[in-house]
Amino acid sequence: MDNFWVASLFWIGLAAVIVSAFYLPRRMMKKKKQLDERYVMNDHLARSYSWFGSLGVIFIVWFLSLVVFHSMIAFWLITVTYVGHMLSYAIGSAIANGRN
Image (cartoon, rainbow, N blue to C red; front, top):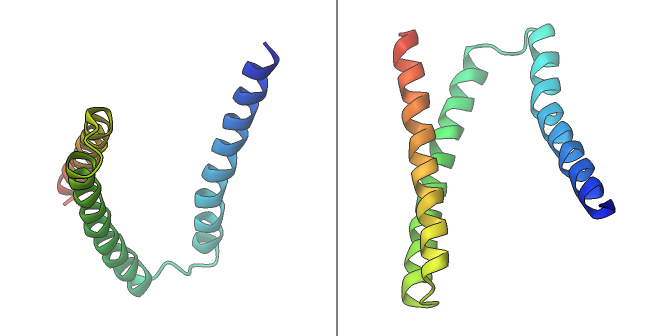
């Protein structure tokens, strides 16, 4: 049972660090009023480029999993990753369209 609790505490701690790494700097920037139009535009543009880059990486790994490794487990894991990637895009798109 010790391994379960150690693993649980590790993942909870890791989640807390990741959430605070995204939340706290953003909160400080809002307090200092550093989130102007230029920052927001650059942030959106960077996210767009990152989205296309990660989509390209998923397609390359998808190809490699079938052609080079011949592993159906890897193929299905990458397929689930792709579906999750595109589903999150669809949800974000729906939210963005709802606000405009």
